Every structure is written in structure tokens, then in C-alpha cells.
Length: 380
Image (cartoon, rainbow, N blue to C red; front, top):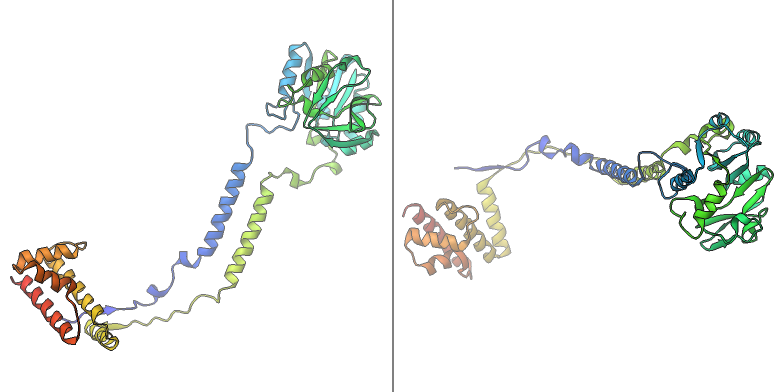
């Protein structure tokens, strides 16, 4: 019987699949998706996002704890978040107006704030932004400290008190809590500038005398208006750019996307294009393959390898004939053949495993002996 082996099955077998052809693009896309997901997961999230020193924030940089203590001491605290809401708030001689987040104070809003708080007992700005300080004519110099700052001023409210914050701003116009040639508490025309807003945060309120200083600073009057300027308080020409409204992870994600695109372009540019596949179906007869292999073995003189191939093929056919399974070991095949034929164990083991081959005559003898053994197993 003639057995034919098909080496090539035509164009469908040679052409690479869709996945293999687009593997680099898929890898880049997967890397980008993973990077975006990791950036999103790493971005702090919560039910509501608060700015630093927000009076309703429970975060470490918020001031909810101070507001609750002030209310417990009988101070009425009104929280307003826009200049329009501030206009609708009752501000009298017993009212202290405290402003945080001055970065959102535009020139028009600052002017309205000064006019609106003319009747207030005190207007306190928490570490105003540089342009706000310049607009108010308050010289300032930013300094970082983690040391305790003593009061050292004539105001009896601060006798014996000290503050401790990770960062403070010292103003040249100040007198209380001196630091680095300036002072943290700086009086100006019709207002007071407080350069240590971190003293008021939930995280640092219990350091040194921070709590006592905060209560005396903001609890002097029975009514406290805590004003947190909003984005709407800026004039159109002072508003932030649309980029400031984007989440913080979008910029690194865009850089990762750019790098991924460059890497993809480099990897694709090094290739010479898809391989040209020419279908060449070839049919080779099994007999021709066997004779060709035999000639190669004879030319190389590798009788040991040829004998090993003959023994392995014989063991495979005997294991299939004796129903031993594909994973049968040579020892199991030898035992089964001995039981089937009645031959001595040593004879069968030598024939199927390790009989030495010295010359062509020994190889021919081995081939004939294996054929006879298979025939005996087939017809015991």
C-alpha cells in the first residue's frame, strides 16, 4: 500500500492568521489600556473632591474638625462658596470673614470682597496667592519650616502660644509669630493675612498650640463667614484654561500613548513588509522518504542512529499491536512481547533496546530480527 504525505496544503496553510499579522498593534493597544487603567486606579477618588482647607472636608488637609469645635463654642459658622452667595450673607460688626482658596479670587471679586466686608469685625485671608498679595500691597516671602514658631507679639490673644506647621508663609508687614525676617500673622489695611493655614487642617490642628491659635483667630466674633471662592468667581479673562479641568492622570496617559505610537512605528518600520507566499503543494511517497533517509544514514555512516530509529519504530508498532498505549515504556513493551511470544526476556530486551551495532551486516541482521519479532507477535 502506498502512503502519501502532503507537505504543503496550499495558500490557506501558508498565509499567517489575523492575530499574528496584527500582534504588534494589539500589544501596543493592550499596554495603553493597562496604563490608563492603572493611572485611573491610582487617582484618589471619593464621594466628593475637596480643595485644601475646605471647612466641610474630612480629609487630612480639610478643616471640618475646626468648624465643629467652633460651633461647639457657640460660634455661628456660615460657609459660602461664591461671591453671589457672599452678597446674600448677613455681615455685621460681630462677623469675621475668613477666606481660603484665594487662587480663585479675581480682581473684580477681590474688590467686591473688600466692599462687602467694610462692616465686618475682621477680614482674614489665608495665605493669599502672590498676585492677590501684590494687589493688596502686602510684601511676602515663602519659607518652608517644620519648627515651632512662637508668638512674640504685644497682642494678648497670643501670649505664650506657638504654632507648628509643615509650611508657613512669612510676611514682611507682620509682627506676630515672627519667622525668617517676617511674620506669619500680618495686619494690612482693613484686613489680616494668616500665613499658616495648615495649622487649621484636620491633620495638624493638634500640634503644639495650633488648636488654641485657630480658635482665637476665627472665634473672636460670634459669627464666622467662611468664604471659599469658586471657579465662577473669576472673570472670563481670568478663568483657568480647559486643560485645568482635566483629570490629573490624563497627561501621563497621553505621554504613554505617544511613546506607544513611536514604539509601534519603529517596530513596523524595521520590517520589509509581509512575506510573499507561493503555494507549492508537494506529494512525497512514503517509500521515497524511507529510501532517502536510508541513503543519508548510509552516507554518514551513523549505524547507531539508524538502529535506534528501527528499534523505536518497532517498539511503537508492537505497543500499538499489544494495546499498551502511546506512553508505554520500553520495559513494558519487552515484558508484553515476552509474555506474547514466550521468548527469553534477555533476548527480547537486547533486540529491542541495546544490542550493539558494529557494521552494516549487524544493522541488516537487526532489521530482519525486528521484522521477524513483529511477525511472531502478529501471528503467535
